[in-house]
Length: 391
Image (tube, rainbow, N blue to C red; front, side, top):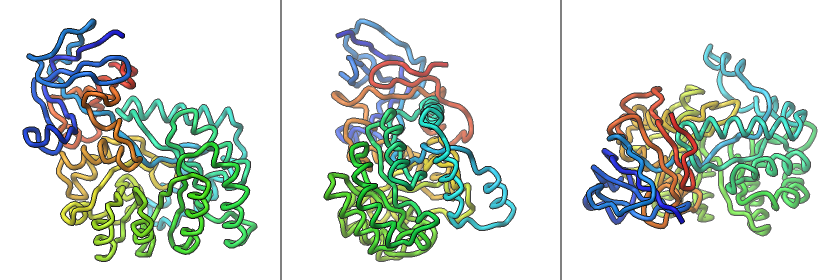
């Protein structure tokens, strides 16, 4: 097996807890090198101590970070909702009703059209440093369309999520639709999914409905996730903590009891600041969560309605500027904690034995991700041990 040493790294973010004492939360190593063998990291440390390798790559003083892990996205859809965005920006409130518009267009699209669209978005994400991602269904809402959405998503990632419980489609009652989601739709979707999710929110699905859907998913071998407390206060976050879910997403409106439950349970609060940027809702209070001992991840929530961005760097900048996270906390949340939100320990960290997924920044430090918002800083991306983006 051939080996490659990437040397000349001005600042290396490892996220390795073993390096935390010297390198802080991010396990920083300066004047560093990384040795890659096959798909994995073989060695990390000071460049002066790097072992010999078959191939040498000079990073030229650039910073290197783990690839971003985007643990929440909705990429399987057709059409866009730019007009809805314009309406929000001119004063109309966001109520999630536009989901049904995307459902109609997605049902009308062919498998080939959906696959081509997802491929374009995944490539867009990769070019911006995302090397691992989760993709949800949720714009089909029929047995056939949810199953095919997940089959499309599975071509691009193993982290696929069945979100049949996105909204109740027209022409059915909530009770009948929950029966469909937990019965024939789940049976068709489960072979293509690892996770099951519910939009637990006023106007979507209540706590009892979410509990029943997650229980059915668990019985079919799917692990649970939740959208919760995005639009208002509610019981979704506490349900996630009660059930011991690995993560609960949005967490915009939190009572003190919600924060306490998150801290006590260890359930990760995945914050999605691109949504608040795109809807003008209040941002989640990340500082409150971090100071309370809650584990926090960041993700894009890339979707056609409430947040059509694929940029994890933008999410980092928003988390620092609007949610009072430190630059180190925000980067950690977008890498190591994104991995944790997918119950993964092989990505989001650069340490021996971990996946060789890394990003070269055209900057001397990771700080530039928040310091220079909107600037394309990704100079190169390695995924599974090989370069996939270079500029």
